[in-house]
Length: 209
Image (cartoon, rainbow, N blue to C red):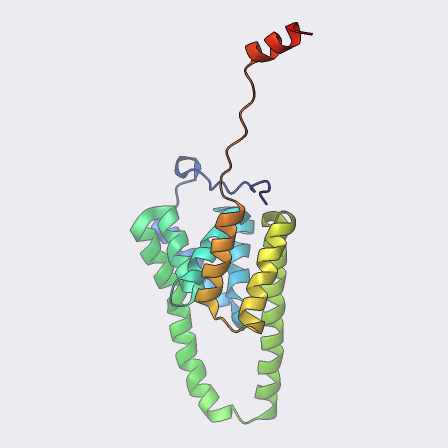
């Protein structure tokens, strides 16, 4: 049941370019201020992987997986984890503040406006369009990550198992993750290679013929 283990090698800490907490704060401030539509994971991947090149897709997928298994907003968890990897706790604090500050200010203003205009047809139509665009952004991001991070039949099986566990069997995210994680451990568990006869023993056997 074993198969080749995909290479999930995070970038060594010593090989990562030093990033200041201020740069981390400004980067996440821009992400927090421009990630419209709810597809913030797509914006995070575009900024951290494609533009800044602070992480590769494998590292981003690992951080996303960890963030999804913890309580709270996955985007906020991901920002804290990324900041910590880049500059320890000052980086994590900068990422958290930069990520949340725009949302706090914008949502306070949006809440005041929405309370006055939520029943208007144009506002409803705009929200439906933004929701559809956010779904497309999330799908595009996971498609890009999946092409580089999923390998072989068993990875595809785990993806389908997670979808069925959440959408069909209604197990919920924690139970589904535990079940799929247990299957992955069993599937990709280390195997001991069968011992080969020593070269001397093979030579001795050949000498008998």
